[in-house]
Image (cartoon, rainbow, N blue to C red; front, top):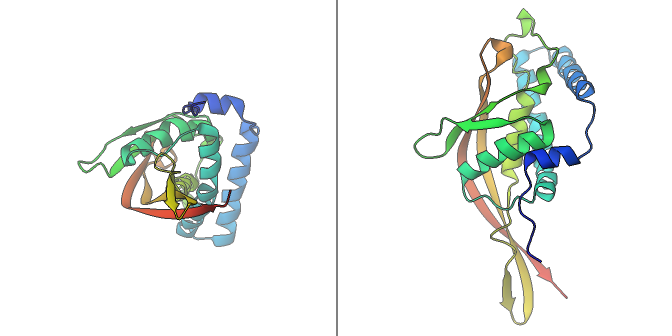
Length: 209
């Protein structure tokens, strides 16, 4: 039987269990508020939110690959499209658009059509330097760092009648920053994703059967 094709973000979002949207938003808000209390400096909160997102992203990629049936993307452009059209829809229920590519195809913008994290949120004057949704930039960075190339692998190497499966992990080192943020007075939520380097690594797994 041929492998199942990739699923759309809408189909995945409709089929997975979800927490109450309002509870999710309020819980995230409480987390940000606690960080502001504990760390005091807004810039330190920005860094902590990014690191929290990164830790989530490196674990979330397995669930994404398992539920979406998405195999290895051909290049960074295709990867960005998958993040926008499948990833954001799958986990947040929102659509996003990829635009503003540079000539090298290594830098683009992802513009969110909506942002459920900011419902009920208004930043006070003391927090104007805060990137409230910086956790999203960390999630993208972490997930891209753990991308797995599944179209290239598995393949077989026959060595003295012993079979080995070689899986190719493609680690995309990226820089993800906010260009526009409605909470800071802009007219949209726009993330810039810049590919710094791409490192393929091969991991052989011995098959004893």
